[in-house]
Image (cartoon, rainbow over all chains, first blue to last red; front, side):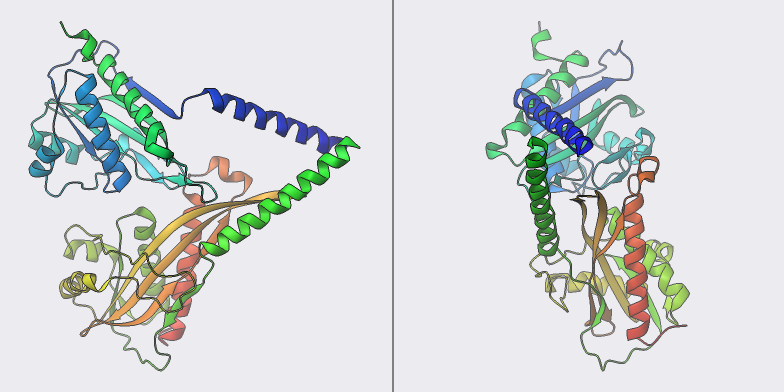
Amino acid sequence: MKHWFGSRAVLAILGLLAIVSSAGCTHYYVAFNLNDEQFKPKGTSIAVISGTKEPQNVALVQMVSDTLRKKSRYHVASAAQISSAIAPYPQTIKGPYKSAYFSLDVDWDLSDRQKIAGIQRTLGVDYLYVIWAPIQVSSDGNAMRSMPAIAQLFEKPNSQEVAKTDLAFVVGDEGGVYLKEGVEELARQLAEQTKMAVAAKK
Amino acid sequence: MQAGNSGTLLHGAKTVVSAVVLLALAACGSTNYPFNPMDKGQTYRPTSIAVISGSEEASSVKLAGFITDGLSKKSTFHVMSQQDIAKRIPNYPADIAINTKVKEGEEKPIWFPSAEKAKLSAIQAKLKVDYLYVVWNRFVRRVTVTGNYGGSTTDYVYPAGNLIEYPGGKVLASTMSVAGSELSPLALFRDKDYYIVDALKDASSDIVDEFTDVTKSRQ
């Protein structure tokens, strides 16, 4: 009995810690990482595209495009430009993960570089940012869901990968505030790290 | 005394949690009809068949692959390989919409909306098979149950499908099933999809067994 009480007390403390920490924390995880810290932008045009046909992925990409347009000096391709250049759009691009059921089993080498290079050539953009958000995970039917995602930034002319991004969002809250916050942070990190933030404008 | 009260409360809470999990599971798919004929008197010609994935989602593709392998080994049908299907149909797996309004517990649902019949007929025309068996994995679910003596976590898969006869495009049988695979401590060292794949293999095995029984095509 003592043992049970002890383990339950630990569980209770851990639960409280989780509640306290969640009360003060953000509802997203964004880690945009350049492959080379000395990165210098070689152009200003970018297209953000969805790596899957999943509606949540397409919606996320649209939000990222819109936010990046406001927060950076990039010339961001519009959804209409992308759709008219790539047919069909959205289309499935093999992503950098082995499986995607309850989480993403990431392997950065698995994305379909040939297809990505073809898309970047077709779009004629300096940078192509592909986001994969293939799943949403709900717990006990809760309306709030977690949405893990992953992204890669490619640079012309050879569609070389220049950055990787690990992402996790909470979706399903009233007004979609958590997702908006996460997308703002993603746009901020992408713009600042690639030295294309609006603040840097002279 | 405090420990005792705490224990009783926690025991009660765990019982409630378990009940909620079971109710949720029941509400979200416990129907298991691996291969249910529309008409039990139907006869089948053990000729050619192609099992096609109705979705490009990985679990549906794997399901189609496992059923293809199982039918190739256990049935007298001539089963087209997934590679041959992919060679003949550009952009395979094709997106065949699934009717999400089918209610849990329906014994013989037709899973595809009538608007998708043309798409299926076009696939059949390219494959030139006598039967198409279109399958999907509807969703995956991870259920954790706790009790006084520990707990367990199981990954579930929820296959769906229809066997269609050509010419004519008549639906002869329906699949609405479920299979699970319980996570072991080895889960830490295994691929993240290990238990989903294991559950898909189980589900496929059940489907193949019932398929060969119903169609009287067991080797």
